[in-house]
Length: 366
Image (cartoon, rainbow, N blue to C red; front, side, top):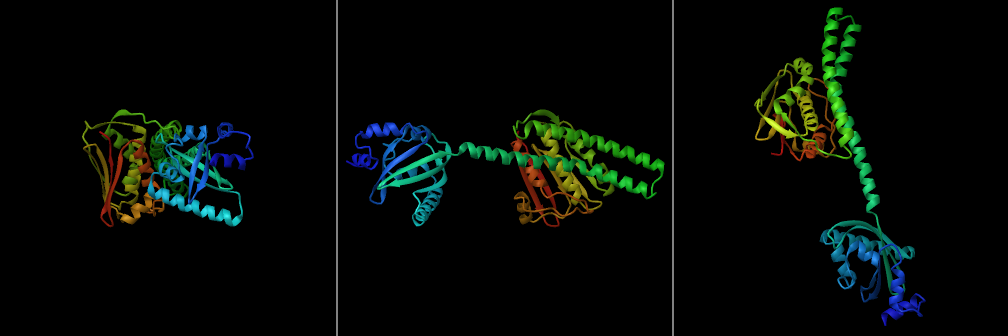
């Protein structure tokens, strides 16, 4: 009886319900036809596109409540969505519109999630609920956001690497222009700057090559590498700053310690951590670097950070101050390191206390 009433509503009284539903199955988008039954909706038909996308059949979900339970299994999310849907229905009635529309994350019978826009129209006591798959659009948007974030990360990496030699070069030129250095001294300093710039150039080239190849289609390329040689290579970049601040660098790393890891990524991580440790260390203080039980740690005697400050940095809500000797820096160093550490499948741990220094550890996979 109910289906005949539906046919009359659709002005298709000359056709059978099976013929009408077969005709509706030609529509390319998934939909449900339902009939009001008291305060609920009874499902009359799921078209083939609906069954193909979501996997559920009419027998499994005879009422709208069954649909909400299956499609939104998380109770908190389901209740929030229902509240939003009821609010949208109320606004539709007030505005006098013929349909209600909203988007949500639907869990299919196959176990995957699909972002869809649901649109419900009504004719008498019958409801047509159609779904538009938005997964492709959202994936493209996520890819674009990831691409932009990776470009920012790449610029940050390069910024950390080239800041020191450029600053040294500017200082050298200023001294020469002010007549505060002889020609012989100038030539000697130029050689030092050249050596540092050459080292940094090699590292930047490596970083750019790795980022271009891997950042947006990321693949970790593991190599066997000596931990001490990796650390010493990074320390060489900061020779001038270490000397200027009279810092003591203590390394407790066995000559035989080796790692299977992506050396380009780990190099970038170590450089960033060393840059921060040196930047905030006081003149004459000590920096310790050790490697024990697959954990590489860098400790300083700087001012340390409060838990609130650490959280703000990881949440990208904090810009670091200038260093102990007025060095300039960017406020995304730790966040950047955290992202790179996750690429290695490792874990970043920060132990810090205000006025007591900071230890940053990389817990690498065995």
